[in-house]
Amino acid sequence: MVLPHQFLSHEVDLLFSRDEPVSRPVVSYTPAESIHCNAYKACRETISIAREIYPDLGKVVLDMDLSYHVPSRNAFCKFWTAKYGRVYEGLLSQTARRPIVPTATAYVAFLYRNGLVEHLYHFSNTLQHGSKKLFVRASRTSTPVH
Image (tube, rainbow, N blue to C red):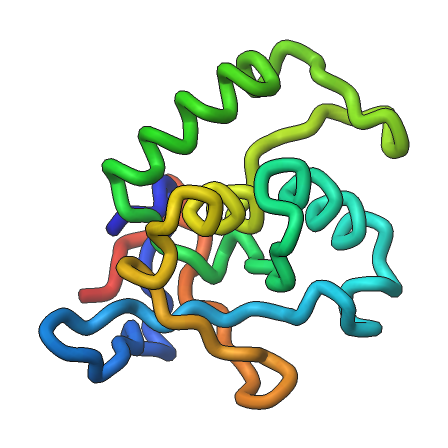
């Protein structure tokens, strides 16, 4: 699991489920139909694009709340490029008139579409259980905490 240009915050440890035979990382999400998403245009746009991939998606996952399974991430990138083109080629959202870029929510939609999500992640509703930022942005002067 990786998150480029980020490292684990010193305030948290990664939380894993106690599933057998393999534990999975716990990922915080916000329900897509909650006021916490519907009140924000960016959240509505994120879920709208993700539902083009998996129409029944009910979770919004923030980009900073997810570590990526590398082979699945690579497959998602190929899927995204085939569907939308290269990320920075200026693909514009019809509603926002700004580039559409892949998000953690779209990646989760891709995993649901392909029946992979339950094998890779365990989800936790932030409205019920809260959340903390798992990752902090790496800078040229920062050193990862191990």
